Image (cartoon, rainbow, N blue to C red; front, side, top):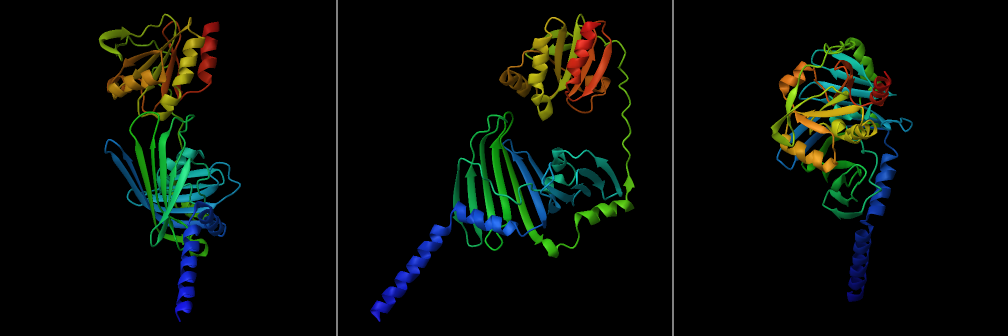
Length: 368
């Protein structure tokens, strides 16, 4: 009897050890990949919460439907996302994007860009639902009664200037699908970010009652908003008004914007990612056309952090402090915004965002 009990106890211990050994990233990855291979589409109720280290919080709630599209070159999937608290939805399929207002039954067609994930219902879409991280510094695996927990630590991303990135992924033990994802990172500039996704009421494949094509067909009942070509800026082909502004680095110094050379004015703000990403290109223009070109940056908000950012980026072109009234005078309602003035002081061009056309137009003005 004792011998039988000992053998039984040993067997239990061996089985328990095997179970413990099986809790590792390799086995969990196999289970995850095996499961998602059989999923063509997934629908869930989602919550996204974005929190900065200064305490500011943004929260989004809604419903998402994601359908696999392996040949899609932008996302790798099609999606429908709706934010239920503001009646705004986003659809993407086969290279076509739609932004929908379900409150007044209107929609518009938009360019299929990655930024769609940040517009209307886009934030409810979690783009990594069908894949696990495969590039990381290290990962720690643990478990609760109902979940496997994967704690990732990543190498610093020097190219995109992202550091201190971690990710905590909670997988349901029954279906190996995400229940909660918490990502924390320090961007190149600004406060540390924590982004939390929570997923509930998950449905897959035949359990989903409506597909994305049917959501697109519903748009036949809606009114299409046709995009009108924006009216040319009223300042174009007119003389630049006399402008004197405070120097960003010395508010006691007033600086007049000169037009003795070709002049490029750059309206930007600290919170504008595309503005900051274009700094090196603007700096290159300054260096390339130094004898023919003045460059003036104008920033109106968060002067303290603007100074830190310019120093950190090593930007050397002149930066001045603007205000709301100046933006209104130039009809600046999106950023970055650039204005090119010839050496006679005439505003020749306006650019909604940086493009190579700016350099071409500078060269044309130099040749005149």
